[in-house]
Image (cartoon, rainbow, N blue to C red; front, side, top):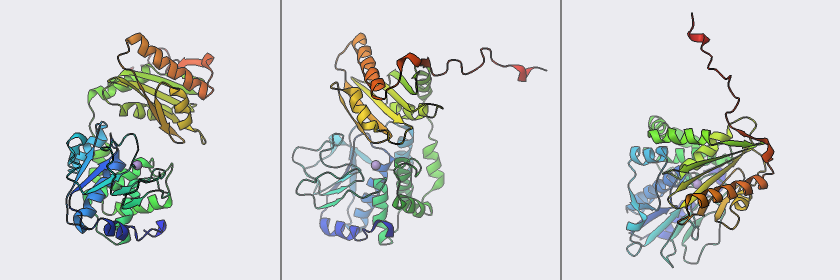
Length: 356
Ligand SMILES: [Mn+2]
């Protein structure tokens, strides 16, 4: 791909790993479409040029209905992390993540041979044979698409569909954080990808519990000034806090949303900001204080607070503490608290349309 100026990357990669026969491709826990798409691309390149199959492995779960549909409809075979045999692997590839990242556990001392990732580059440990990090692109799928495009390597249709979806979702439809390289990769993939399957992925059927979570998100939402906070209580899928934080941020007049929910013994929360220089990551770190961990970038961030065996009252206290620290960090006035939907409609349902 001419725009990224790294058109020898595929050659360097293949030179570094030639002769390897047992491949594991690991993505971060609870993988997203970008991680899955990029992993599929690496799998196909190894098959084509090294003649070897790969197992795609990760920990956690795939929660979002769209992501589950992606695996199903594109026939992606995956191996749960606990079944990965690192000893019987001479080619470990990390995709959409890097060594040392908390959401990508590795056996102690195991150094991956290959690292391909678009997040800010960390120092790689010695022993990494090929590293492609630190490029100014919005997704790992863009980097992997580049390997194909630079040498005119045909992209299998399912993989093109996955890479396209990966770029789309990591760049918010090619808006925030996207670069010309993302757009070029996306456009080139369009002619190969299966748009019908992509649409079926994006409109995946969801369980009724999905709507129950929406109901709770709206019901429990309190607007303080320009910041909206909602706690979902117990949920079975941590991805929902991010999805609801996005959903609520569309409300006019809001600059911040924070949505939290409890999965097993952990409070998960997501922050979203509509502002330009929002520093959501630093707000998230202030919101957890010393209680847990948090991270993120400009517009979006998230965090977790371990709850242990805390009783209901203690759990509520922790949610309140996170809320208070968040409102302080974004300087929202508590005196202007209101329910999200209060006063938004006339008191009685207008039935005029049904009358003669
Ligand atoms: Mn990514």
